Length: 258
Image (cartoon, rainbow, N blue to C red; front, side):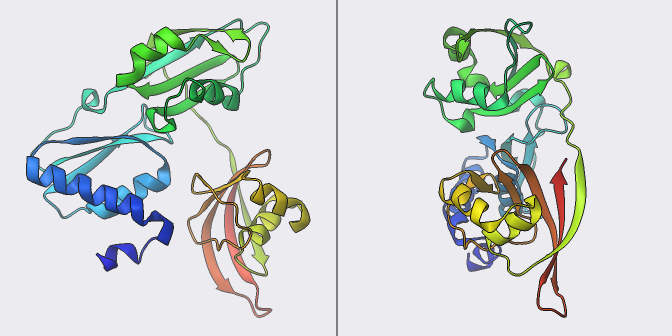
């Protein structure tokens, strides 16, 4: 057990225990287990805990190939998963696009105000005036009946098939930089080119996420592979921590959203 834990942060132990429970259930009952939507870090943990050389397998699906949030299907090795097993429903949001400009946070905020968990929703895709949503099929009828406005805008939902999902294209630029420490405030200051005095209140006020989870400690230590997002400044990923320079600074390679 400790061998599994040592590869992850302490705060991820609860989720690791949950995945181990899922795995044990599949082994004991010989039937598949479907998770809610997982962020990429959670998917990484599931894949690692399930492993490859096991009588239990895992597959992920969130729509088309390039999706961020996906459901995990954990199943016995003889089971052959199909798209229907992931229970995904795809909606296009109909609204007065000539007069209204919908943003991701508005759509998500309105969904959350219905009292549903974030884990019941996959990606929200926006391309100009097209807005699409992936959700767990078990809440699809509830959404159709209750999701009728975003802010003050009246909306309706039109169910679409998988191949109608619009592509999500993220342009990234690679940065090579040095920082004095791997503290969250220091790294974010370097990546986003803003002062530590400006980044620190953003962190303490819950506007910064590491691996899709809010982190409010400025001294949180970043690692190789961490995905950072600062509200209003975009997302970035630390693709490599390359050790220290002669001047005792950390050398980082970072992919940053353009």
